[in-house]
Image 1 (spheres, rainbow, N blue to C red):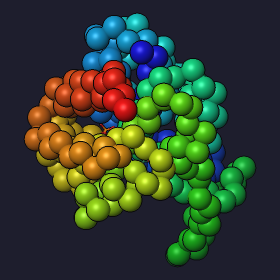
Image 2: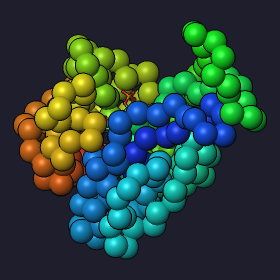
Image 3: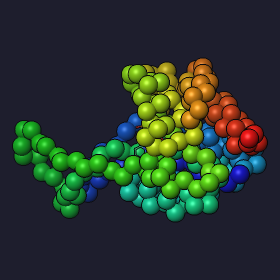
Image 4: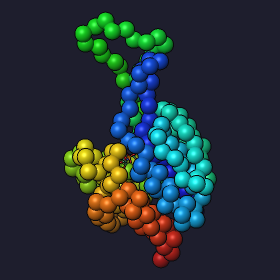
Length: 216
Ligand code: PMT
């Protein structure tokens, strides 16, 4: 299969020396890419700024902002059989880029933010016949309920719901736990384990479903 995977954070510039970002290390997305090439798939990885070495045989496309990621993903999605969005795309970006460094004058400084494009929702709208779309849901509360809402809102085939805000899993950790939820409501709980093993499990489940014959 031709698989497109996103990983890592995005950086949203405020001025020439500052940006808004998050704690994503890219480990989850890179582990998925590694698991996919090991199974013989053709993998393109669109990655935000991380300090990881990309797996061999993966085509790496490095981006910085949500807008750049949106642009690359939109272009590459057309030829992908399976798309997995593991990137932690910033939901907001600075409304205005200050071309000079913002000076330390005010005691309280407000920065106006505007919404970024929802890349995954866009892919859901333009999904080709036979293409599989998998999103992640990073939640600190109501994990399954929020994840299910995202399946519908973004027209996904599967969502990987993972808890964030804890040290032993989620952002930056080497380990993670997840519940896979399918569009049809199938739920598969994957306990805490290394991101490498978890990635293999996630891929196995999703690829198996992709090859299941349609029974009328
Ligand atoms: O990188 P690591 O340190 O290994 O951490 C892994 C992880 C916690 C980042 C990963 O497992 C994860 O949960 N990734 C998704 C993070 C996220 O942005 O979740 P969300 O619930 O806010 O977004 C839902 C989905 O929409 C995600 O697939 C996201 O990629 C996508 N999205 C979000 C915002 C946006 N503007 N465009 C998007 O496409």
